[in-house]
Length: 333
Ligand code: BTN
Image 1: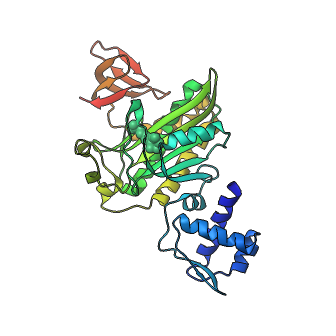
Image 2: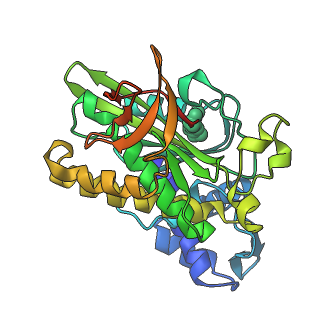
Image 3: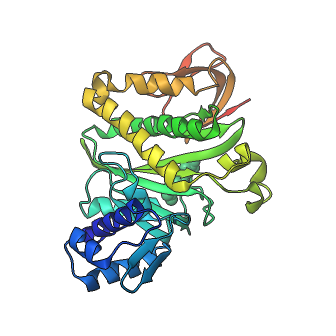
């Protein structure tokens, strides 16, 4: 399976390198080290994956590079990273990319494997919510990580991912989005992206973490139910321009890899998380403002004092005491 994908990535690279010029079947056969009929089978598979490839007798094959699809070969072949996003499990439709990635985690797939789908039937949001996942427009991806951290430190990856998503979104928006604790990416008060972390752990050891990310890229809010429209946006809604989902995914994986390497090389509990917290704060706009936090067991209203070095939210209540919040939903009041 892996070999087949690697060959298809290589085949597409060879066809792209030649521009819109025919490449002979013989040259492809020799470069890939396979038979001519195997080349033909790969070409057929690539056509099914959305590529437009002409075949002509005695000339060979030619790729139409003006119509590149959104698929796993495109994402993997253009990943500028060492690990994250070089192994891609792509589907047109799944229940949830997080559910798929959890299964890959259990079956021993390596760190950095990503799951991408064009649409999700049952996209999962935080706190049991549904993540609306229309086809053809957005990015729904889940990244499998195997960090050597304690279970209590794994949540820090949520903030780390929020920094990477905010950084990537900035590059495409041309302006900085904001983060809402712990992990919503907003433009003004409208949500542009969300993150859902799930993990498999033992008492003192994380087996693996799945970082699920949904980014509204080319979606028009008119595609959504009326009650959601005022609180949701997309890159296209903000800029009036369409963005390549492959380009976005590639930039996102490389940003996550950069922050992940930085944090894990130094060690999460040995200062490696400090630059992540600093970067996260630079996107946070609620510090010093009145907020209401609804967590599973209580509601706290007070002045937000930012986050502590572990990423917990600090809220000074009416009594003057500062509360430390580790999970919940925060809204301005
Ligand atoms: C949130 O509620 O803000 C979190 C939303 C996370 C959505 C993404 S889409 C890709 C991945 N697969 C899922 O089922 N959920 C996450």
